[in-house]
Image 1: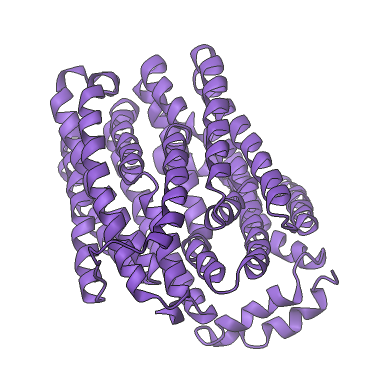
Image 2: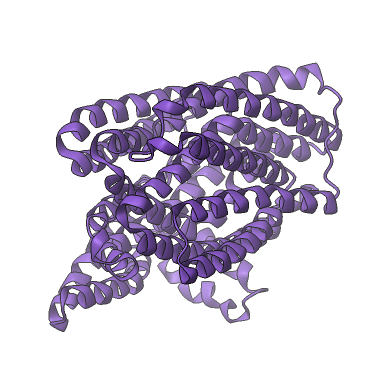
Length: 514
């Protein structure tokens, strides 16, 4: 099982997850576009609010159990201790079931206070749908997380692909026959329920079974503190990741504002996943495996590499979001959803600039610094609440996006400082500065190219985005932000893509001298 964490296996897993995510994202774009165009801003806002609330419930039901399961199952396999991995699997599974039931009861108690705007007469129907979908998705997320702990990344990729295609076919059919909001919600629940069924069958086929015996006391003495801090961190994060802004928009502004805000958030998340899902999926299991086998030295080296790769992808995303946010909203959703364009532009730029947060959070988690992650989460939710409560009541959508942007940037700065000072890790600051410079230069040239074309605003933005897409990676080579080791990774993909053979050799003259 340890071979699942070798360099080639991790690269193959990253490519697999990237491919399946591209397919799922493409299907998701079509699905959300059809539903939004069919329902209009108000009803789509109610649909989006239900999907968002179900996502929050999933976070609370798993409550960090899936994160700790990935970390300690991977670490046990890094020590070639399959028995402990199976016992931990069972231990985490029992707690996931108990926690799901507890959250379900609490949700029913607060149901009248979290209902969608304008949907007061269907409270029982809304509660039943949200609870069913969230329980199923929580079960699914825990299952694929434990699979990642075993190095089986294909289970999530396969199930995500099948269900995305199925959902797309169903939504197209409903769009053509003119279904209403309730039918779309029932479909969402049905797809949610199907996810864990597929994952369970794949886990059985892979021979992954949990052991109900209690793990060793020494191991649990390390697991429990990590889990406690992860639970606290997850609880706070559940109410900080645009949650306060979304809740206030629903309560104070209306369903349409929720729809605009969630469209921007969903497109941002999709763009991030398309660019970085491969790295994100394999990162924590790989770091945990390295921690179990070689300790902090190898983890520090892998973290520096991951931060560099994430920041490259994030800067690329920020540039493309700057140019393509407006055209994307207009082409997919139409003029009725135009207010979402500026929200999307800001969210993508902010998320791109802070994308390496994923790598920094992962290293804090696997090095038993969960208390720092909890403090980070407390800072995040405090900042989000302060700015949202201050700005949303007076400025609506503008206040919500400002609150989100400012709190996200401040939290990222906090995490960078924490990793550098507490773990003593040297982050690739100069490489990140070089990537930012390459991004700014590429944006300036792209803007000039768009201006020179003399096209309309929409078409010139599309041209500018394509120019940036080509120019930015080239400028990172010219500015020498990549090491020889970075460039040599291109050869690892030559087995799957033969045309890559020899590319790294030709690019070595652009390698950094640092």
